[in-house]
Amino acid sequence: MRQGGNETYVYGLLNGLSQIEHPDFKYIVFLSEGIPVPEFLLKNKCFSFATVSPSAALRFIVDIPRKTYTEGLNLLHTQYHLPIISRCPGIITLHDVSFLRYPEFFPKKLYWQLKLSLLYSIRKSKKIITVSEFSKREIIKFYDVEQDKVDVIYNGVSENFRPVGQEDKEKILKKYGIKNPYILSVSNLQPRKNLSRLIKAFSSLVKNNEKFSYDLVIVGRKLWLCSEIFNEIREANIQERIILTGYVPEEDLVYLYNFAEVFVYPSLYEGFGLPVVEAMACGCPVITSSVSSLPEVAGKAGIMVNPYDVEEILQAINGIIDNSDLKRNLKIEGLKQSQKFSWKSAAEKTLKVYESVLC
Image: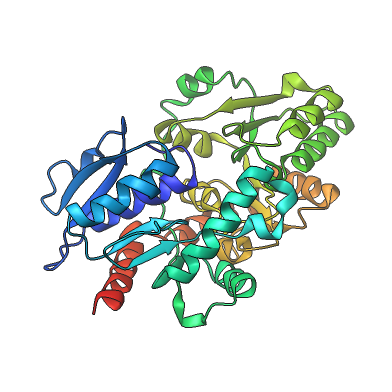
């Protein structure tokens, strides 16, 4: 089911809700045509399911409004968008407002879709859930909403992300064509993920140190405006040292985190930054950006860098690779930090938001 942050959020929240017995709540989950019911919900009597169109326009103009009536809903919880017509109050989860902070990083069509629909949804929603204190400040700044309308509920991390043994290492690395020790980055390919500067830093490490034997593995789907990333790889002329895996299922991603020497997440803007927590939960040392939500999420368990400074990214990578004590300490602190985030806790807090709207 996992494809990106939005899907991961839904899957994780449903998993958390399924672990909590609530005497008054029953849930109807809207699934696009062709999306299977998550296995952990199949035998849960508190959950039922309704099919909606894979087209976002048809979903929000026709299917969801109609189902709020036919299913007798008392509350509707969506991400980003609310339908214009509905029989019940609605709340939204808004992960970030990156399109307002960095409009140049978004295709014009997507930018205007988000800008117009969110303006309405934010005004209409009874509550807004967001995933960090940073995102709450951004939402209040850009939309001038009251502070008490926005609730911060941190994302959880799947229990699948954990330290594992070396038994399957050879098989997993062979599957993705990884032959050398590697530096890992996990993010969809789009401008705000700042992969171009990571590639520049990595290129300098390769070209200026003959003994540098590490490859760079980038996990994630191609999204929009990602041609600069491929241009950077071609210009660096080190294609044989950079592996682009595309989408990797969660069960394999766990191993890629575990076997990496270091995880680098130099994003320019995040509402949360879930891969940072996933890497920490697997015991992988983390380098991430000193901007947006990332210091809030990583705490003192990661190395913070200025994401605009290629030299600083380079030095941070070198510093971890050359220092086994630092690597060990980051692993220990990362495992501790990751334990602060669970989907059950997120679900418990989300239920309190539901209750506040319905009571």
